[in-house]
Image (cartoon, rainbow, N blue to C red; front, side, top):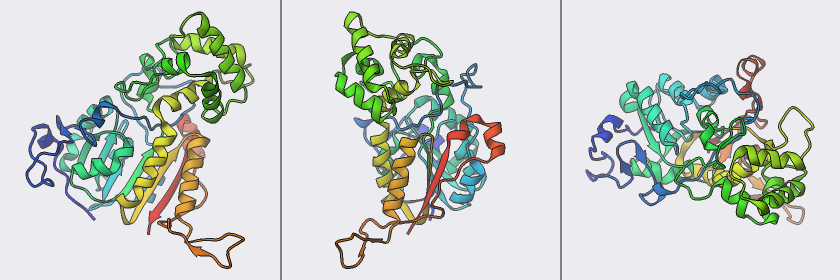
Length: 367
């Protein structure tokens, strides 16, 4: 199934969408910014995963976009992005996976909520002309984003939940404590909730909850109590301040900094990452054409657990319970799993690209 994409260069010139009866969609803004609606474009949610953020990063001296596609060959094998197929890349980032699909002959709609990512990909992949369309928005808005460009269904969906190198390397974003920076951690700088708001204003019980649930921090109560003691004297404003406070409560027991899990938990809470993931997974069902493939790359156990449970629930033809006389049809049955166990990077890739070591790839084929 293929619906030709309007060349993005014409969208820049504000030409009417060929899918809207000659009327320009309200979602088309400056050609490169597509969102569910103008209001939604003022508030985006995060949807990225965790890439061992606070360990050494070979890209730390570089601010340009770079994206070596993790498990690229395996993803190509699963998605089969051949000529005539339409792919939705929900996490465009540096454009690595999109480029591989385009080079394989597919049409690609690349989505990202980061304006810098859209700008980069628009230039880097412009030579593919009408086979590539960058759209700006959160992948949880997938259905509306596609509707805005006249696409009802696609043949493949890729969600790479890793945080981009550029976001990590930009110290001003406050994602890590490699540099001292304001407590921000927003994937979208138009969102109101920041790490500083959580650290300085949330109740102790809420801090304990997110540290335990999102960071899997065993000393969540001690970390939260230490933060409350510190903020009673003065607001906690920077990444270095927070890291030192948490270090008082959480002893160093491995090579990772004691504040790693707390920073992860705060980032997930700021961007509602797990909620957004659950939302987008459900939206893939009507968006994928029959035989279409969903592929999801995760980078920590919280994300992987959500994806695994979703795919298992949606791929069971029948449900059975001890109290039932016989199994019953599963009303949520929508997928077939090409492999039940998550795929991981091979030894060669793991050695070449340390970011791939924590990656897990799961896939499902639409019935």
